[in-house]
Image (cartoon, rainbow, N blue to C red; front, side, top):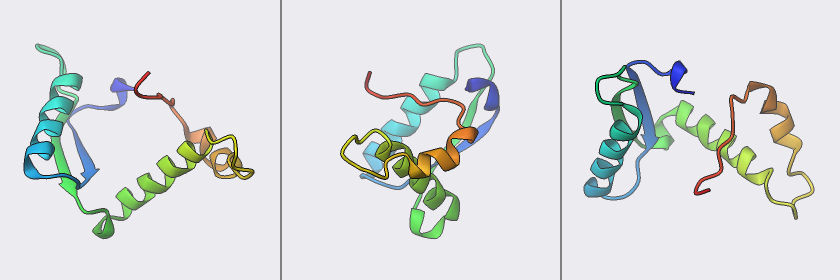
Length: 95
């Protein structure tokens, strides 16, 4: 998936205190940006999803994928089937 990121700005729904947000920023930049290599993540921003339509869409997509793993939900694949042709991959974390 890293081949799709070059100098990217990652926008995350704001949560936690400033210390947590800073730790998350540093973690993401270190995890994805390899020393001496291409800089995949240029910037990590925290925004309130109530004022960002793309974050709301990401929440809906993540919710649909998460629901698809709940065997007790009869409609668990309804929304996943609508979006599955756009998937690049799903990673379950922690492994």
